[in-house]
Length: 152
Image (cartoon, helix red, strand yellow):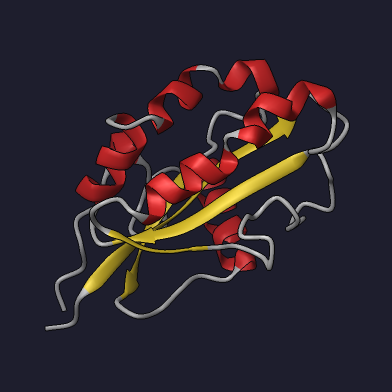
């Protein structure tokens, strides 16, 4: 039986600062390493998109320096949910309006990937776009509309 992991894209939002170096973003940026280290050491963590500086803020899939993304892979929806809602990360979710403008109704998308496969940036952006346009399905979904792991 093929095993799957959960991939996700999140935090698609427009920064209140003109770019990541803007002073309004300082506290957010100052805690990126802490949050990323927490993720990487959390139960169920598999992989995250990062550059040579160990973060993802340099990626620009929307051709807009004010929009940043995070893409990661986890062993299950439950382990991803535990990290998102039951750790220090939750404090930052509650404060996101301090640093980001709303980008749309949907800023997180999840989908199943075969174990050992990692999504490209374009695939992640396409999944979020799909979810925004079509709603939850086997293609992409969110925490409110979870789709079970494929049975193959």
